[in-house]
Image 1 (cartoon, rainbow, N blue to C red):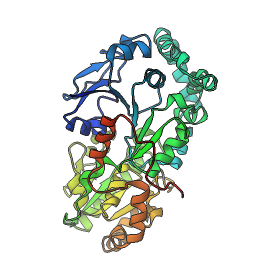
Image 2 (cartoon, rainbow, N blue to C red; image 1 turned 135 degrees about the vertical axis):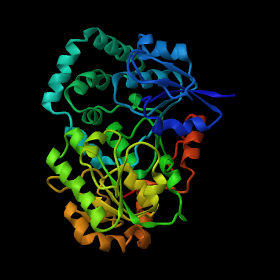
Image 3 (tube, rainbow, N blue to C red; image 1 turned 180 degrees about the vertical axis):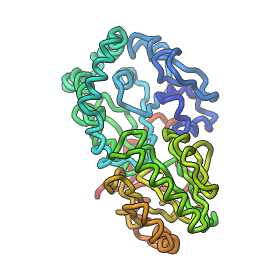
Image 4 (spheres, rainbow, N blue to C red; image 1 turned 90 degrees about the horizontal axis):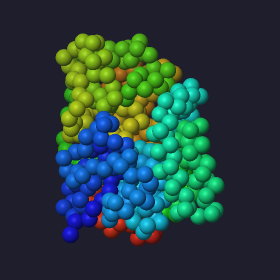
Length: 415
């Protein structure tokens, strides 16, 4: 008999949860959008989509839908938190399912200040134009108050106010209480667990470490290397307004990649982030040796590249697990590490300037640190992706079917 799983996840991020559909015993129903008129369509394997505005309270929603499990891929919005509180009170198993591979506590703390005063004011003004919708959300949330313990009630009541004033991650870290966390936290690694504990505390849930399911396909130890291919894993710093990136800085890096490809007789694969502007890159009219790739699956090409130039992205985690040859980039207007500093693992090179391409590329290509440093690689896997054996997806699906973790964590979390 199939288990009905209510999945609280953004419809467009099929890459986060699509592997759950591979299990014939799971029947996925989706909950994310407020109403059908909002943009976004569920993937075809979702049996049915539900909408928050169809129900006035979380308890009413759950009694109408009667899911066997609830799997949440984010715990930030008030509706999500109310849903968890009500589900726990009704005895419906709740699970948080991680969706990122490179997160850790330090990275989460960097995001505490990503919500400046100007943004807070703009959001407040936007809420004034939609007071009816705001009232609906507040009632949906506050209606869960009877399911909260007396000890947790002050934090429960304060959370909407603090969320309006601070970055969501900072607000969550300040106001942790057991009832707002799913009973099981399916996190992929020790690093992910550190981030989860920072934001949600250490009480009220059982953690389960599975390894990173997205990196099962990276378990390809026999894949050959193409020494003539260099991959650049791009990030939308310019589009996101981060780290002082400008149009001029962006163009300088792009043209340097083109010049490098011609002078060194290399093929350069530019793996663009989904939020990056493909049209901007096309306007540079780079040499034919540079290929722009934004859609499609390029995993095998990244794994086989002789050298991968990357910032602190989740892709870097998977590539290091697979012992590929990486350079950790700090190619910002003011060089710095942002996110996980992968060079600190000792498994990849570090570069502060795109000019290094013309003076250090040969050195990098001839010295794959991840392949030669066994002890550091074992430590990296233990922190970021253990076990790395191609079976993480199967372990996650087993936990969802079970509805909860065993209650114990079979790894040593001591530093």
